[in-house]
Length: 206
Image (tube, rainbow, N blue to C red; front, side):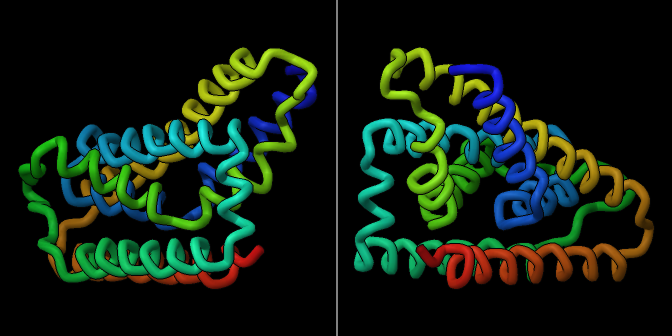
């Protein structure tokens, strides 16, 4: 992979990692409720799910998925259901203990939320099925390109999500009124649902 191609890959996924969407809002909500470190578990879940999407992109399977109206529609329905569940959980879930640390749920539960969200959303299909194949050079070793892409995508994704995890934790420490905390939960949940709806029904069109 030449330097120019790699830089374009960094820009694409760097912007993607910083753009508010369901994954960003999930990490922000987790950080606001439990703190920075627990919030990085769903972020790791999102990045882990990307490994599967990258494998599907390298083998051409994700491109085939984008061409199947039935499969793509099913992914939209499932993705929107998952996003609604997570968004409503943020809106109606408990607010953090503003006087101290709120006990986080099991690590596996936080991690699985990130995995489930990323695997069920149709947006990774668009990124990995329609956009990423353009970065592969069939005249060069595929495994080398695969590992470069995996390292690059994981790093840019985690950096972007870490920014939001830090922000959510900082906002939690700044607020001292449970009503403000509830309003922030509502805001995060609504943004998650709206961003998810846009991704599923508008950004997911192909």
